[in-house]
Image (cartoon, rainbow, N blue to C red; front, side, top):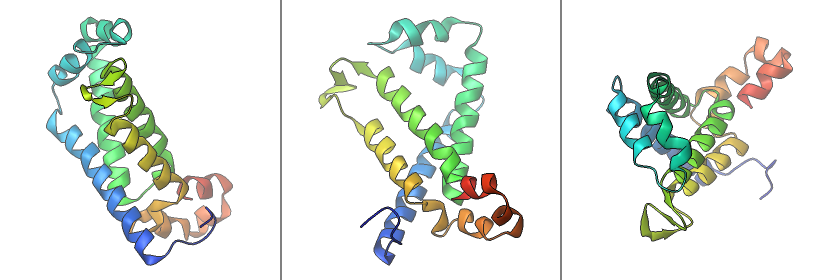
Amino acid sequence: MSLTEEPGQAERVLLFLIRISIGWMFLWAAIHHFGSNAYVHGFLSSTKTFHFIYGPLAESSFLPVVAFLVEYGHLLIGLSLISGLLVRVSAPFAILTMLLYWTAHMDFPFIGSVNDFLIDYHLVYAAALGILMVRHAGHYWGLDGWVAKNKVVESSQTLRWLTA
């Protein structure tokens, strides 16, 4: 199947389920540690391979800003994926987040534990998010398909790209 070919029913259902599942993961992460810098501090201070990058953030005066960005980033990505609105915009941010988390948990060449050699679930999520983006997953039981049919969106190349 080419990327321009319309997906069948089974693929639409799978794209929807993957989108909702990853969206819930981001939304729960936002809810779980909302309003507390402790989660972000603990995460950043326990990094290994790239501790010289992440560690100082845990002890800096920028921690509240970083915690705010993490909390609201998770929230917006989760809401976007669950609603299917602006998936093309949120997916690259989610991929970047997954790649940053992947590097933060490294104890090179292991990721998190000796069971994860170079690859762990962060990279799998990043790949799944890439598929959601290129297959226009927000159009399947999501708001992107509905918004894309709006006359204002149809007449604007930028808005069409955002909901594509």
